[in-house]
Image 1 (cartoon, rainbow, N blue to C red):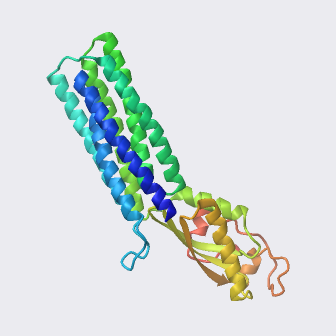
Image 2 (spheres, rainbow, N blue to C red; image 1 turned 90 degrees about the horizontal axis):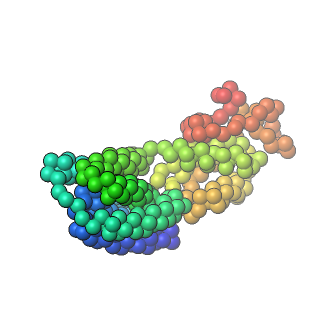
Length: 330
């Protein structure tokens, strides 16, 4: 639960930062009356709302397990990310509407130098905060923090584009560029929102994380023990920052319960060392069968019935199959 509390504490900071930067951007818009800056301010409105939603979801996710939620409350993070992605998309369409309205009813701009200065400051703070959120979110497997970080970084890039547009408007005095810049970055914002929404839906639907599986399979192949004859039916389900993993480990049939448990414990410690305390394992031990001899490299086996031929190299595909591996199945 220490990881969940760290995530929650960081999200509190992110929410405070979002509120502060929103006020600064509103001040910049009030000074300049630029629809481009209004674009940035509208996205910051989403930052503030999403910040509070993420804060609440992380508060829920940090709660201990109970009889009604035996796997914890981590799925709340996926719901908050879905809401955040949806809000970003809505903000993008509002920005497009405001920009088109500005084309139809153009208005004069003022004090662009002050607007550029204030918005530049918000871009710097957003980038620093977003980078830290993504880094900590990946380390702690927190989709809510990663979503917040990506949102803040997308805000940074859109703000930089808006700053470039404002500088160009300041130099050329072409007012129509204000709306054009706003529309261009509205599409960028919508694309970012779509990616966040897509990732959250994948988490809710327990979609397989191939990148995570590939990293795990590589680690297992590199550190494979002699008694780990085979591994299959590996599955990973995400509950917020917790990765619930279960699999079947084939070990020599003559190991006693204590010896088999030692092999399971070695497997668990290996993966927890790599992925941290957020990984929990449920490993079922299978005793080897006669056909396992051909893929078993154990040299001192006194009950071997067939000659060892070759070891099965684990892959994302074969380690996920719900059947034991053999030479004939390859």
